[in-house]
Length: 385
Picture 1 (cartoon, rainbow, N blue to C red):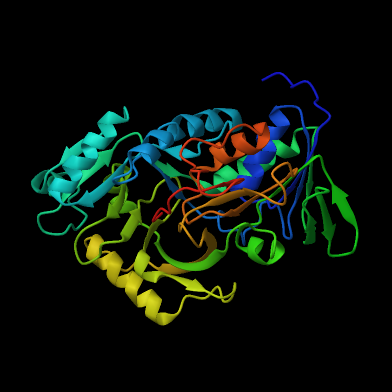
Picture 2: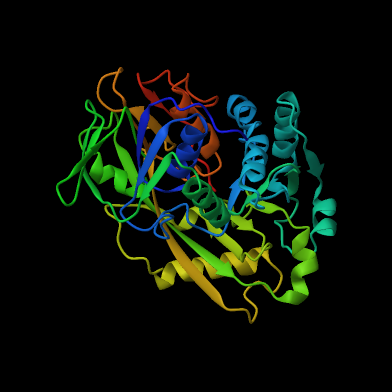
């Protein structure tokens, strides 16, 4: 695309996770001068968003407004894929496993929002996905246009695009220790300071300490454990046609599976291994949590644990204490030039393009983000993935 006319606006972004990087890209495309700071490398492997894959889908169970709002996400990610000129979106579908009654109700919700969906009865479910194990009498609701975002590729591809853009400065290993919302200024660990016309803080799990006393509502820190298994090459044909699976019924309700593909592993996790914690701590998965995840894998995949090596990962993220979801807020007075994406609610990756558009354009809050409860804040309901 042709270069945008320079606006002269200086945008300072703290945090090089998916929200920070996509906001930098969106601002740069509009002609802003952009500086991105991160306490580690860019992209930062310690960021919650630095993972193999994440889920994007429109359906929010039982929530018509959020479902309608999220309907634009596949198109947004497809546009970004074209811009980055690298494959980042596997449209493998997302399958919600639930009772037949619930699946039927949610199919009506999808159709009302203009979203394609397919209802699979118990027999169809087992015939189509013979390598997976489902609860007795469970049905499935498939959203075929949904799928998997190749998260690491998103971050590395966006970073590469930003490095090639003359209006962008990337400053890795620049740790911010203080934020002045009124002046849109940050102080670095060495004592120097940087300022912008717009300051956006998207520091992930570190936002709670960095923005202490500045947020309009409390946030809770969560720790999520995940298990990965490298697939056997002989299984590739079956996995190529496997959607993301979200369990909403049966003994493992709250569990989810992301299929392998495009050089990613099979990944499983569950709400049972997501818990609030006081601080960012160990990156080692406790044996008890590993056992829960291994049991989940063997309960969802025929021969799941098998001979293939297993590994685990710990992820820390923040959620709005009142809603359990995301928190996008102005810091200070309503006219403040400083914004913060202070909590992702566990499902912020998929919504990153909408957050980026909101911050870059300083328009009305993105669709699906309810601003009725607090002036200058925005929320969406917490997702399991």
